[in-house]
Image 1 (cartoon, rainbow, N blue to C red):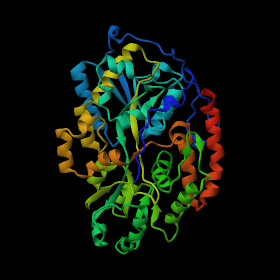
Image 2 (image 1 turned 45 degrees about the vertical axis):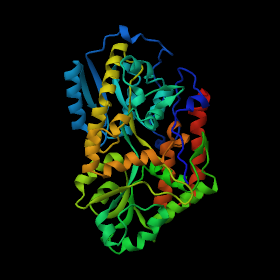
Image 3 (image 1 turned 180 degrees about the horizontal axis):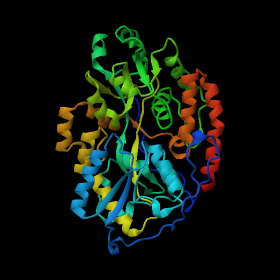
Image 4 (image 1 turned 90 degrees about the vertical axis):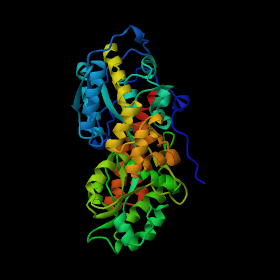
Length: 453
């Protein structure tokens, strides 16, 4: 039996960072991501009596519109303004989470130019917290009766550090296994995803016989904030991990075996190919299956001319596990209490039971409140689009806390993704690729995390 690991939420009992820590620039290669230097100073543990604060009448929200959600966000903003009288300026701050983060980092030296609400992805929120760029939300959420206990705790706990929460879940996802039901049927396969990666390898010959020319059984995209996310399922499946706490464990036999297995499925006689856009190739029928975000579901269903199947990520030979991902919403610490209170009201509105269900219905992201999961709205959605149930069930049955080095060490996600690209694109053996990046991970930790323990 596979054991589901408990969600994060105890990191504050492992270690606490000194207040006011400002993280130095990584000083690594360009793949390490934007600098984290230059964060504005903030008053440590300032206590605000929120009952004495009048909310601002206008705030700014920086988003990348995850899951092509700009229209949905605009609809919700209009409703929020009608209900509260607070205007929200929706700014497209980047095409993806990394671009939003880069803009947020570069603007941090000009506090007046910062937003009141900002997207905070799974690999960026902690960097914001280290820099004192975002505020803890527990007190202000309590003050506006936001019912934080109703958040799906495995998602809300992802933002817990030092016994406080630094963001709320918003566009949250798990990677899903997508498969082309038409090709599956033509190959004589059962109408389900593979239970293990080894089973998909066994099915490869049958699928190869019905694939279009230059097609493949599995198409995957690589790159920062992507390759290291889906590979976490595979390294766990072989009994390995990126790290034990903050200590890299890429030199273990299990991790090396996982990396070499990955290289093998992309080899000339393997079952996988690299896609520039694996979701587009899947929707076009070029690849029979792919790993895609939950947030890609609605777009994929609209784009595909065949029936789309969704399934849990396959298990490995040793273990099972699916990482969570996506983004939360954070409030910059440098904004005035009036702006912060209005921003908190907006966070609560965006993520309340009805609106998280509406956002899920229109994007494919998971509803972030327990009350929404089995709401009448979502039950109707599951009946009409059963694929949307997969992510909710996978979260309950397979979710596993991501390895610390990926989500807590600045730049580590890009470093890990670089090694995965070497294995997949250049055919580098896993031991060599992992030996190359381990010192980079150790340096990133030593320079940007360890001094603040």
